[in-house]
Length: 382
Image (cartoon, rainbow, N blue to C red; front, side, top):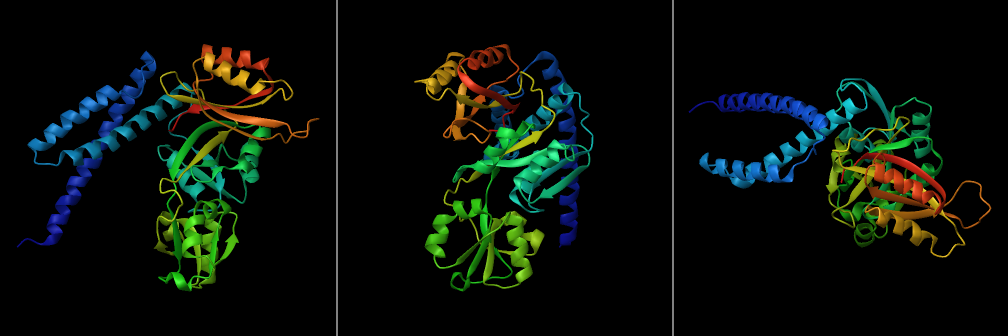
């Protein structure tokens, strides 16, 4: 009988070839990106992708492979190929070399959800990325506005607990602009220094957002524990690590446990199993989004308070221009104003702010609003 190590070496050799071929595939994708940019063609082609998957699934059968295996594998490959094409197109259109150094500010330290989001957003970035962990949102924005960091990562909303008001308030006054977004699956888990039963847990540490997103589990499973709020999930994990008390645990990402030598005790504890957080990427330099990339534009505006139907008129104008309003929320206006209850609305529209039709919309909205600001136009990550 052959040695197991020989089989493993054979697997390693095959995997090396697969990686090499995937690199060659990505090189071809770069050439395709150049063609699509020159001819203003859409990055995604659903009909072509489905045709490709059908062909590959049939070919899988001839090699005695499961069609579902090949379908899932190539769906992922095509997803990352499209992401690579978009990255190449954006770099060229904005006259930025694909291989360059950059810097990013995020909340917390290594292992926080903001750190994971930053890592995912910049994973296709070619060059050195200097990351700065920050204690609060104001510090993130300050690093960007003073050009200490080129980018900042801010969590703006969660599918379970809603909008993050602190960030919305910052967007009212910052001079930076939104240049991207990243959706992150939030896998809240209970993390401790070693395995322990539920009955022995006395203290839970985490950021207010994860605690709110896991409120039902905490109420049902740990109704009598002491809750400790931290500035970030990374701080919660560091606290539990330093205490070395099995009865003290943190709520954070399962993926981050290894950064702090913690053990995942209970997984999937969110109120909503499909728990997503949307992060926005800010910079002092706006991004020009090509017309063949699906874009999103975020607006901040106020309406004439004592004019009947003032908000309806704004929404009707958006409808007239055939633009989809994917989100609208309001916050108290924090700048100096004569009105005590004046509100500012934040709206996300599916569309490119640099198109002629969108520019016409902005012009038409001026007479219907008391203030209007484009917070950013950026590639949609939905």
